[in-house]
Amino acid sequence: MTVEETVDLLIIGSGAGSMAAALRAVNGGFSVMILEKQDLFGGSTAVSGGVLWVPCTSIARRAGAEDSPADALAYFDACLGPETRATSRARRDAFLQEGPHCLDFLETLGMRWAYGDGYSDYHEAEYPGGSVRGRAIVAPMFDLRELGSWTERISFNLALPPVMFQETVPLRSRGRTWASKLAFLRVAWRMLRNRLGARLVGMGPALYGRLFQQAVKRGVNFRSGVRVRSLLTNGGRVTGAEVEWQGRMLRINARRGVLLNSGGFALNAPMRDAWQPQPTSVDWTLANPGDTGEMIEMVRGLGGALDLMDAAWWLPGTILPSGTRLYLVPELQQPHGFVVDSSGQRFMNEATSYVAIGRAIYERQKTVPAVPSWLIMDRQYMEKYWIVGRSMKSVPRIWLDIGIIVEAPSLAELAAKCGLPADTLEASTTRFNGFARSGVDEDFGRGRSAYHRLFGDPLHKPTPGLGAVEKPPFYAMPFNPADVGTAGGLLTDEHARVLRDDGSPIEGLYATGNCTATVMGHSYPGAGASIAPSLVFGYIAAGHAIGGDR
Ligand SMILES: Cc1cc2nc3c(=O)[nH]c(=O)nc-3n(C[C@H](O)[C@H](O)[C@H](O)COP(=O)(O)OP(=O)(O)OC[C@H]3O[C@@H](n4cnc5c(N)ncnc54)[C@H](O)[C@@H]3O)c2cc1C
Image (tube, rainbow, N blue to C red; front, side):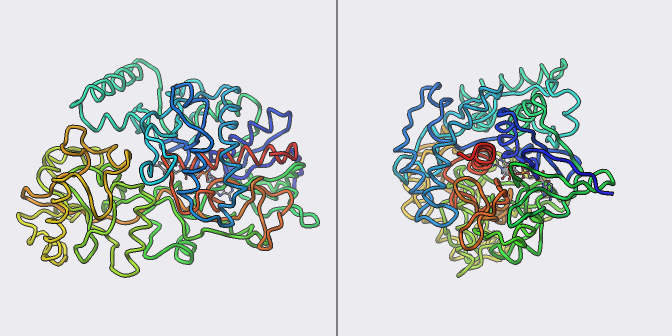
């Protein structure tokens, strides 16, 4: 027997955008139900760094950071390049204009925000309007005790220390600067409080935890372990969904609309093979296990258009035989290291955005194999800096044994061990070392933007991000274009309505987050460029569904 229920807004998937949409709708007096297929809510958002890239916010303004709509637009346009269907003028404007409103609105409901001061735009010096202080917004510390028993219903990564995203920068200097010492003290204080009974969390858990708390408080109906069988339609309009939940079939009618916030397809091997640049692997992703793309395919069956299916939120990474995934972001910015392809040649700016690095690797792969690419380092790198949060003064024996890191007394021997041409590797090293001494990377401009120097060594001269690779032994670390999710999917308009190939909207159907073709296109303007559009277009979708406006 099928049970019939009716709500105003039905949301499928419980990512970032669901929270903004649900809160906007319930605040307007509308009923909302969120359906999550996994047992736990939160998707990738709850395990993420929790950063949002939103220009011109009152949060940044309160912190004294200058920004202007004109600068934001110039920078955004320069990052995105020519308009496409997913990155149309209307969608760009919608994101930039509604982003600050969305954050203010959530704040009035009890959400708290902090400015990620110093987390520079990723292409700040390359494009007009870039911000050195950055446009990153984060959630301050959140005490999970405020969520009560709901804490157990969310897929938090509780192994993370109580750190705020922007603190990861000074922490990496390991107490060598005053900023670093202060950051250590703050984190130690929080850890002490946690030992005394608090449950302080930062980053994604703080963002998702407090948003979820607001939604629960306002009566959003959350259901997990739900299987969506089909979307209900009436005369071309989507009117609800038929789902299986706790052994029963439910027919859920949605008076105002259905919003999909069901993530991408990072865990769907056939979809990855069909759409993503190759080679690729489901083993390379850090996306949540629910990222399997079936809602994208279901809506494709209803005539929904797809775009940007070759895009992903790339992050350089490697994988241990245990299955543990290691991600390399600061590692590529630190001095005394650079990256080469299989021919031993440098081919990119190692310190640019991780998404741009993924694209650079796949571009290179078209002519020279670059999967894996190799991070080449020397003794100075190992003595001074961390790799994936651990000191490398003594490289773990097991890493050397299984080739996570390769060690050799000379560059020629390192090249032989890695299967790279020794003469080219030596020539690349000599050229890179010249740039390290002058402080100017003439080939790829590494160090030009403030972001390129963010994870450099503030004490290193002449520039924090470039240091010669010259002191034996030498090391090489292979890595792949791994990812934290895919970035293409359903084509949506400036109201977050799902569009058909002919550009007409499927009435009643909205989508946001990684199940859509992102408004960011193939670019990544700054930290938080994935969660922000999910949240903002969720907010926009709800506004349109309940009131017909943006
Ligand atoms: C470790 C890590 C750190 C990151 N840090 C950042 C960061 O700081 N800033 C940033 O912008 N991005 C970051 N990202 C990427 C970002 O977290 C994701 O791209 C973003 O959270 C995706 O959000 P979403 O709204 O699309 O949905 P998700 O958070 O992915 O949630 C989608 C949900 O939908 C559910 N679902 C799927 N199919 C169905 C279905 N058929 N029925 C019901 N439910 C379904 C899934 O189970 C999942 O729970 C990070 C990612 C990771 C893994």
